[in-house]
Image (tube, rainbow, N blue to C red; front, side):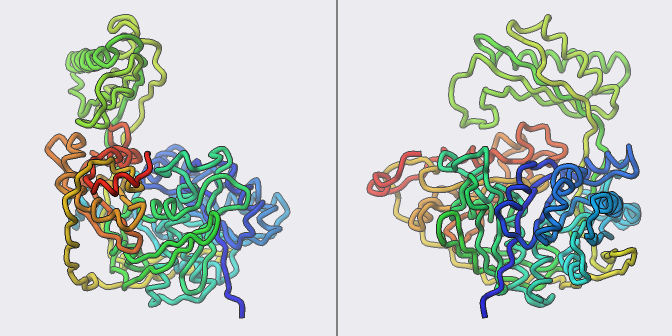
Length: 597
C-alpha cells in the first residue's frame, strides 16, 4: 500500500505576513492543510490593546481580509482544511465573523473554535499565590493586565478535525501545534506516541515561520533567488514522523540543508529538551538530507513525556514610550548625533522636573549607521549620514508626549545637517511576564456547530527525563590561520523573552571541532558584552550532533524582551549577524580550501 502523505502549507508567520503566500500555495501546493501562525509573544499585548478599544475585536483581522477570506471559495473547491491561531484573545468573535463571511459567499464550511487558554480571570489569584517569572524569578508587577494566555496543545485541534471541522480557529496554542494537530488526526497518533509527537512538533516548528525555512533570512542570502516571489513552505508528512520540506514548483527562494537547519534551531534553547505542551522533544539527533532540488528530508526527532504545566504568557501596562527618528547629514555625523541625543534628553528632563512629572524611567539613543549594535566589534570610521533613534519612557503619557514634542527643536537648534524627522510616535509600553501554570488549572474548550465540550491535555509528569552527561569532545590541535566564522558556518538568531539564541551550523561536519574551540561560552559572552551594562551575559552552549551544529543561548541580553526593549533589534534577528566575523583558528590547509564569504 502506498505511504500516506499529508501536505501542509505554511501560510503566515506573523500577524501581517505576505498577501501573496496563500494564492501561491493554493495555485501550486496540492495541499491537504493550510496553517497560519499569527501569535508572536508581542502579538498578545497588541491584540489586548485592540480589544480594550473594541470588545468585539482582539483577533487577527488579516485572516478575514487578506489571508483566508478572499480565498474561501478556492479553499472550499480544493478541499483544503485551515488551521489558524488568528483568534488571539477573541476566537469566538473571529469564528462569528468568519461564519458570516462563509454564508455571504454561499459556501458550506464548518468552523470550529478552540479556546480556554485565556486566564485573565485567574491572574489575581495567581499573583496572590506568588507566581514567578520563569526566566528572572521576579514576581508579577502590580500593574494593569492586558492579556494572560496559556499555550494549549494540539489534541483539541485534532479533536475538532475528527468532528468534521473544515476550519479550526484557536486562541493561544503552541505554534507547532497548528501542524501537529492535523497529523494526530490523520495518522491516529496517541498521547503516548512521544517520538511521533516530537516529529510532528518539528514539522510545525519548521513550517510556522513561513519563508524563513525556504531561504528567508538565510546566511548565504546571495544564493537565494527571487525574493520577490519567494516560495512559502510545504511539509510532506509521513506516518512515521519523517517529512520533506519543499515549496511550490516554480516559486523563488531556496530549500537546502542550510535553510532548514537554520530554521530548525530558530528560537530554540536546549535542542535535546525542547518543551511544548504535548511532548518534550529531542531534536539533537535530527538528520537533514538533500533529497532533490528544493527538497530536504527531515527525520530522527525523539520525544519524552510532557511536563505537568502550561507555559503562560502575561502582558501588562508598563508606561508610555516616545520614539523619534532624526536624520543627520554631514561630516562627523555620529558625533553630532550623540551630542544631540544627550542634549535633547537633558532638555526634556528639565521640562519634566519643572512640571512635577518626575524623570524618564528609561532613555536610549541609537545612531543607526554608526554600528553601535556591534559594540567593540564595530568597524572604524563613520558615515556622513546617520539616523538618530531616540527612545524615552515615562510612567505617564504626558511625559512621553513632552519628549516627542520637544525633540523637534533639534531641526533648528542643534546639529547642522539635522533634517525633518522620518517618524515620531508615542505608544504604550507592554511588559512581558512568562511563567508556568499547572495543567489541572484549566481545560481547553472545543465549540463546533453551537455545541461546546471541554477537553483535557495530557497531564504530563513533573520530573524531567534522565539525560546521561556527555563527555566533552576532544579539542582539536591549535590552528595556525585565523578565518572568519562565516566561512565555516551558517548562523541564525532569534529572541525568546529576555534571552536570544544563536544557532551555528557547520557547513561541513569536519569544521565543527574548530568552531567548538572558538565558541567557548565565555568568549561568546564577551563578544556580546555591549548588550548588558552589568557585564557579559551568561551563555549556554548545546551540542547538536545530528547536523553538526552548536546552539548558543545568551541570557538576559534583551532588556524587557521584544515588547519593551529599547534596542535597535529587540527581536534579536541581527545577533547572529554580529557573530559572523568572529575569528576562528584553523589549520592552514583547511583555510586554503574555504570559499570566500
